[in-house]
Amino acid sequence: MGILNRKSSLRFGVLRLYFILCCFPNIANADIDLFVMVGQSNMQGYAGNAEKFPCDSFVKDLSIDFYYIQPVSKRQLAEKAEAETQHPSESSTSIIASLGKSWRNFRLRLNRVFECPPSPLPSQEWTFLGPQWKRFPKGHFGPEISFARAMADQRFNPAIFKYSKESTSLAEDWLGPNQNGLYDDFVKHLRSAISKFAGSGEPVRIRGLFWIQGENDAITLENAKLYLDRLNSIIRHLRKEVIGDSVPIILGADEAHPSMQMNPQVQAAQQFLADQEECVARSSMLGLQKADSTHLTPAGLVEHGLRLAETYKQLAEKCAHQ
Image (cartoon, rainbow, N blue to C red; front, side, top):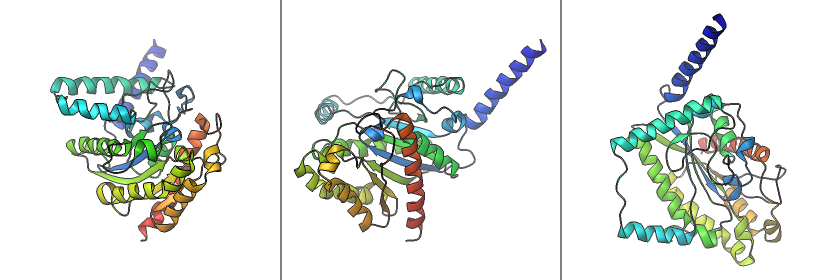
């Protein structure tokens, strides 16, 4: 009987800790430090099978806000935009819908305390750090997991917005500002996600943006040569309309990808932009463990997140002294 009482007491203690640390994570620091993570397959976590999800920080994960988007193709984006114009969707902000989301989020958080790997999380809503739906039965994850944990260790109050789509190029998919591609869709979703925080009264400050993309632009010499102008146009728009002039931007792509080796103009473009602007840097992926010719393994994704965190730390210190 005494053993049962101790077990019940332990379970109750865990639940109390959960409610204190996870349901009210932002009481001590009301400001949200938002990190925006964008890119193609190695940002997505194309080979990041969540069966290998690093489960050692569930309390920390539950205190980190997370919002992710699994975008569709350019053609599907156009069809969606046309449908929304003809049949505007009704608002889903009713009390019943809100209560339903709150209850689902509560159950996910409670399960996260006891399960590993954790269940994949719903997209297009603020929840907590964890695997995402799509790639594998138990979900997938990218470098955002270890990166966000590292930011929490550095005493930030991190939130992660992630927008990623495999096998995409600036030339054919992302396009540029006001061209109805993935880039415009990304900006729209980012603003929507921030507005949801603003509606809850939590101040949001964008602390950094990560752009891990470029391999598909290196497939052809023509697109590789145009990558500098296209990426520069995106950065200029981000600076002017979205994140401001002093927010660190970190660029990256797999330098060892066969197309990147064949057409090195993409890597050169990223390095040029990093050399030209104080608050832009390029992070290398050389030496990270791979599952195939380009996609990082779960262990490689964890290491990539830590590498991005270190690059960010160095760049943020440099930007602060501008």
